[in-house]
Length: 403
Image (cartoon, rainbow, N blue to C red; front, side):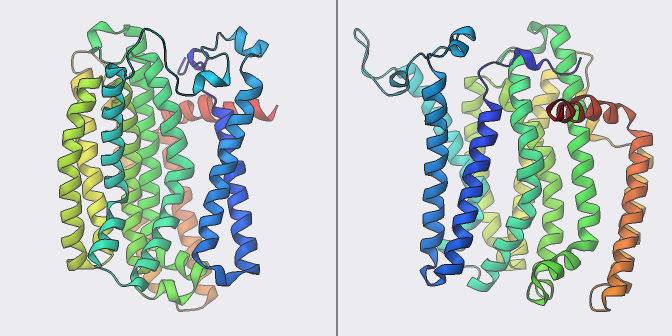
């Protein structure tokens, strides 16, 4: 009922996963080998690893499409491209050198990508050009940022990419809810509601338990160098930022799947103002609270983007009976369990972590495990619809692959 994956054509998910996995693995292996054998090369190691990553990634796609194009499988699927040459720029007789309609669309996407890059990596430009942090603080910030972003890369990003395609296929871009097929509207609303609930609960779990276990995680990962300074505060703030990332990813994937060109252009102006505001807030918050200010600025940035996407979703569904934004409301009992678990784990950290020996740390970990188990049990009892959705979609997909 939930997803009609057979509607999705020409989206090479398996190719993308294989190509990126092989490229990342090759980059990591080369990095480790060069660091061990030639540590004096420094940044050259990173540069060579990036070159290898991009080369293998491009090579995987080229080899695949060289064998795929013109094959019986491509003909059977009515793939619109028959030769590799068709993928290269070429001049067409009786047509202008530039297709201005496509050029304007390309310019629109370029502006959006550029502004999104500022919003995503803006703090790095502030660090580099305004010199608001010393190199030591920048190094700690980069470590925390890389650790914290693992959840977004491995959990939230695949969800966003997959369901962006789903929403774009089920609903028609640029049309309001009255001009859509009502069965498709109901399906999209149900999926959006449950997706919002899923990422909200994942984000809340990381936020609640990440606060009390940030210092322990950094102490195990990097020793006292990371756990004794600003590292724990950074990771605690990043745990909150993960919650914003979770909600923003799903709301924006639905919004961008439904926006028409004019709405995308309008949103570009919003992002331009937001980019300038974000850079200013990053600068002032960093002077006020050091590297933590960067994460707080990112939380503010994500909050504004979430508000914009929620406004779009509300306007889209306001003339229908569907209310997918109710997925952002966890059950009161589950919310109470989160609050109690957060309070218990914070007290556990005060009494048992992290300079009181390994036995105290084990007690702290056990307390967290019990609180997490209680949270999951409550989740299974109160969010039965969500559990059914996860079982029918994610678990069934893995079981099919396993068989």
